[in-house]
Image 1 (cartoon, one colour):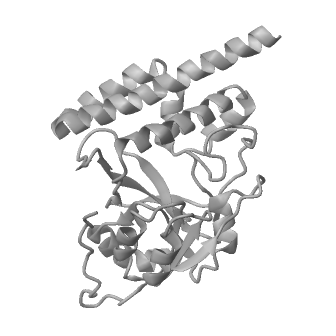
Image 2 (cartoon, rainbow, N blue to C red):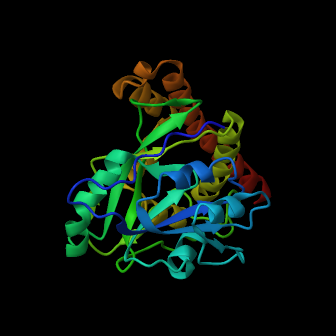
Length: 295
């Protein structure tokens, strides 16, 4: 696999050689990705890879790159993986950047983080949200829908809530589609986090099938769904309420947000996510029908 060239770790004049921000990378069988991700994190002096007992070379590659590997074996209860990591990964710094195995900050984001250090120290914000620069079917998308994540958090003022979802199928060991909650203001970063998904597109569909199972199960529990809605980003909470969501989302992403300028990849992404929302609806209707038949 060809790796994306890593940014230079030589600090600009007047900047620190390392960033006093801890990084936690979440992994499970990510040997094809983790080396590339870690190659972009050289400016951070504390990197923990929290690994769900991978059966491939993920741990070995991470250790060889200088990261601290912390094994995670979910016991089926709370806390789930992300909150467990905040408690047990042994991070050195108060501010933590949370990353999936195929995510890393762009050189522009590293520059912004350097500039933000005084603000981080001041405690003005309890967390920061950021948009993703998303790679889909081999192409980085410059237009269309942008995923927003709350990935930079002050660990003294942020935590992942316990959503009532232990009964739900899908990817159960890690918090899905909701954000860490902060007890202070939320900032927004200007630069974008790179989501460098190089997996075969079949894995995207497999993951989203699991995600749809989880979302559909929560739809059958109104209190849990209402609670979840308060834990999403503002954008996520808005989309949760939109009627005719598959159609509206496609028009929004492909036309209103100029996804068509990304060519076929822009269409595939908009249509793929619209189909994901349609899939959730189909599964909800099936669950309701099954519940009515059982009554």
